Image (tube, rainbow, N blue to C red):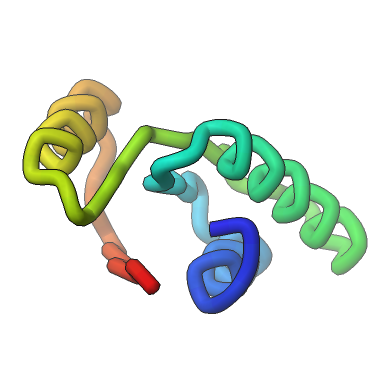
Length: 88
């Protein structure tokens, strides 16, 4: 998610009114970097209320990882308004 379509999508969602953006990524370190980039982007764009940004580990090539992601997401008790799957 550190670059490309996934990163751009997360930035645009964050800058345009999303209340909570959850990043599903294989690499926690890259997810943390992505969150920092999104926060900076929102600040640079003058976004008055940056959404909550979270990371849940996810490898779309691994069924166990997908199930684990779903369990963690369900624990958050949030609605799922938009789902963007991007595995390049």
